[in-house]
Length: 454
Image (cartoon, rainbow, N blue to C red):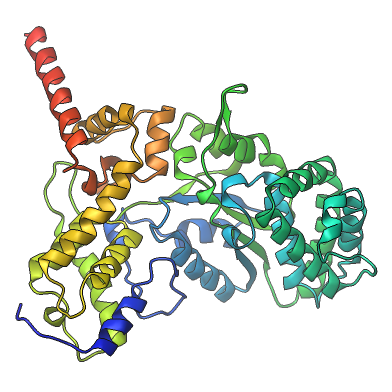
């Protein structure tokens, strides 16, 4: 690629188009279809058909690594269902809830808030507002907020439920009290919510085939293991309270942490929610370590499309000093979309002029590598070495944690029309000194084992 210098306005536009935290809306020209390099899964076909074809309510789980592109796919899924005449209510839990301490009661309250807002012109929410009023009379801490229950009407219901979830997000002590209060009265809340949903369904029956709620970002719930009960908070939400999550009388799609799905609890989850669809990484290597060109090309296309949104006149050789720099960023992302976008943005921060040189790219890679190094505990390097050599993972808490933090990545390989999941470490980890020591130690152990078996 030839060197070329472009203006500051383009540099600024490029920096902002590579925002790693904004999911794409349906129809966005930046979207790149990666289905065939992700194991050929299609949320519209699998989850969509389960809703469109079923004569009963459907409750399903959707998973994948944080930042893999689930929100973008769910937004496209929403549009697909709307084209099939379903009324779809989508919400991102992180907008209303504190991801570090989400309980099933928080999910229920947030669902209630968004359903009231969606059907404010189709159903009467007074009974739900009265339910909230009765609960909060016992919580004196909320007296200092702007929450008021002097009257009960639909607009008040929307604002008051929104204020309640806002208080829960910003005040840990109040959040726990609210969770405890709602827990005691969950059956009555679900009962009133279902009456509200039933009325909305009756009013909309001539226009819509059904109601679907998509609860996004629940996969971000921090993993907390309770030594006393020997259970994680993920188990408490999605297994212990699964029946409550399934009592809401409309189709429900919940995102779920990937570490929960690939654990010894997977069969229990599938017994209660059906088959769980996963969005894996874009494959940049095959399990035997060879570069996978179709996946690399798709990541390059992802970069190219965003560049063309800023200016159709600018080419890749005006953004990157040489082609190897772009390829390196793609490979170092591990096929993780948000990591790739973040690597691009960081490289753009490290230079005042374009094109991006190897120096800026390597600095972006080094900074992200250091982030991963800090996330790995001393006892985990050996686990990562085992995963790297075997391309497999065990159903153990330490493995689940590394899957949750994206130190272990999931890929899907299609062989003979069947999908084979496999695992690898994030490529940024490979050159970390601690990992190299652990890898050599693991190779030595394998060699000794082979000698002893002879």
